[in-house]
Length: 303
Image (tube, rainbow, N blue to C red; front, side, top):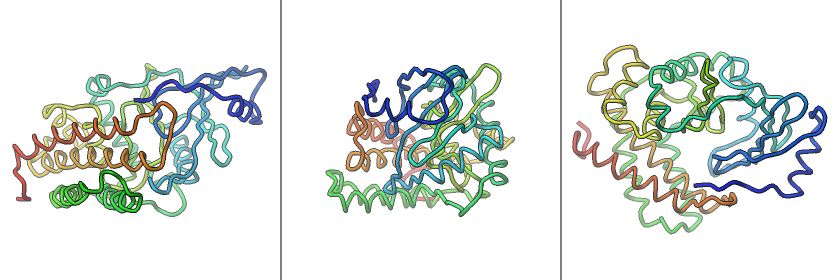
């Protein structure tokens, strides 16, 4: 979806001026981001990731909260060290690790389930400040308001999206509140050969486990059998039918939220080389497929 970003002289000068480098530096782009800039900077001390991004209130993204979470995740040993921060810029240690793709996620379900469960259970003891609640159905409704106010070309579809959100929310199984990552794209999982790491905490906040499990599985194209294995690995038992249905519904909700994220981004973001229209359509296609499978198994109305 995104192309390799070429650095401008202004951006290079901004990065070179950061007061943390040891000796001369080289700067190269990191691919994969579709809303922020990420640059690999190498100096005499090793590699560092410079992440540049501002507050995106239309996406509920606040950089001070992201920084707090990144530091908490470092403290809890889930994320690389935060080496420097100033408004709009965060520098983290670069891990010599492989970025996961969809196939990697599907091949490591047990390891990832253990990582996500530990993150959910441990992070509440490390985060600080006002609690942020991430509930995907609220996010969908708020995105609908943003799209209406911005005159999106998708306004005509919003009533059906909101009705779908209500339907999917109604079948959610009550679960304990945990601290979720809430953006478990494959590229936010790193493997250094010995252990797994998490990165990118823009959307992290309190939720239930189901959104992370649904995002992880829907973003990696899980089969029904792989989704079942994920639930069993996370909860430590074979899932019952309400839990299976809850995940299947939340997988649809995750894809709906991702598609509407992209619709809002069409209005407010302009990351070079990023085609938000194409990303919207990709997620709507995936939503159609997931919803067709969900309706085939469970029908239209809550049982």
